[in-house]
Length: 287
Image (tube, rainbow, N blue to C red; front, side, top):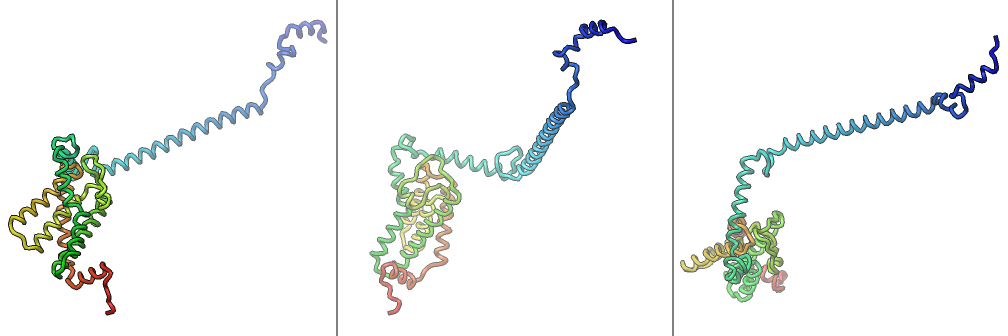
């Protein structure tokens, strides 16, 4: 039987979801929107997974680096958890050297314990300066009239130049600073004595004293005074706070090495006369 139209109208009125303003609630979402949300979620999940994988890879790389560093640490001679015996010995000796050098720096400043004799110690250190000895040797060479004296003075001048250049090169390579923060003076800059290791004054004093004791005839008191002068010149830089004790000891050893090298390649009198004639621009090889 056909439905009564009046009853159908009553049903439609009673069905609230059939009204136009509620029709959107009855419709299912489109497949495109669902797929779009699904792809967005999948992309977010893949990005999250990739970020987690990258974090795990970075952690693994960092752990591998840490393992390599820990494997390298025992071979280094530095402060570490398991230092070698050699590293402990070197660090202990350096600490003792710095401590003793700072205690001996009693003339480092005018306010130090021995600050009243700082000027005298500075004057003593000046007697072992490279510029002082080079200028003094040149003056003596111009005043010398004997061939034997000129031979000794030319070899001494070459030894001084060798000492200055060698010490300056080693100091430039090592670049060790003194126990106290002291700015180098003008003469130190000229002589390239900017750092503390090795001690330039100690090297020069040892070389000059050994040279003079070998090639000059001196009385016993003068020989003792010459050795004492060399030791005090090396010690003066320690008292002024410019150098360490080990710098002074290595400087003495280097000065004796320079003396041995000069004695090995000693220039004869004729070679010295040739150098003098070249230096005075009076050399005439074609005559």
